[in-house]
Length: 365
Ligand SMILES: [Zn+2]
Image 1: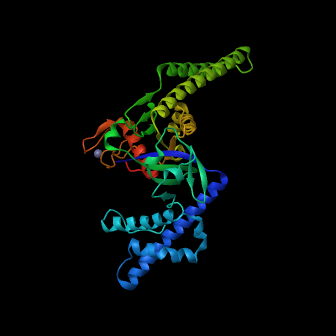
Image 2: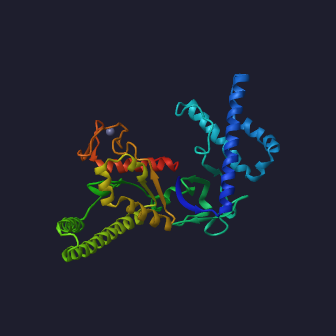
Image 3: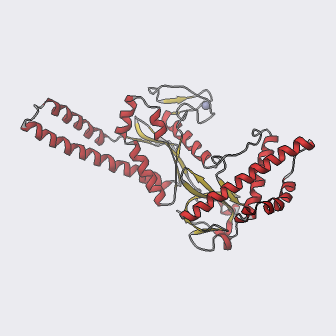
């Protein structure tokens, strides 16, 4: 059976340019061959097959010498993708294939990996014409068992997705890659798709209360008075203490999450903030959402793990079990759906964040 592993890769500037150029050429070929199928159908009343298009490829390459820059296996995969898109359409699993812009053509695939050739240099993947690209592997894999190599660009980062053959009997001993979704909330700082809730610890709540009290006291002190100066210093100290405590706590949470997971999906706060109201915005600041994301990201990427931000639209309203939209306001703590699912609302959202993250990475859950 096949399993998938995902790592970050770090192409040099020059390699990145070549990768973008390769994506551009592959996309151009994809759109060309789609156009070819459409025209052929109009003219002859029947479509083209993968084999027919593959036979036309040498002529196309001759007419477009820039395609020398791309390995033929990768180009063949482009035709195979189009063929799959048609198959999915005929099987009623998808809409009619579309022409792709650069936002919808973001990966290249080498369908037959060769251990010696592609992984001859340890810690690197070799792609012809592009060179040895550094892999940030956070776990070992056996290069002789890698079947296909997929290189994907997403939101400023490059990833390598490997499909790896695993023998049935060894399957149980192979540690599966683990993915997690995180929903940042108000009642608890974070809820995970595993059902864990990280709440604001009591000692932190206590410190925050003290801080508020000190703030009130300051406002009652006379301006310019000695007492006011004293209170100001006290307040500053308290602020620092609370900030430190919160940082420590967020470090602990993020450490825990990154340690046990390989793919970490969170909501994109920039988008989430756009949907905020004033009260919510204040809680965002208090709960340190942005800080948690920052910690998760650098800890994950330091180890070559994947950190991905997803659009939070509908993550809290959609049922993670059946996909229905179950509307509820912030005061409703439990997600209850007709399909029978009844879970914490934040955990439900976290599961949706996970699904969306995997979808974005091209991994089907
Ligand atoms: Zn449901």
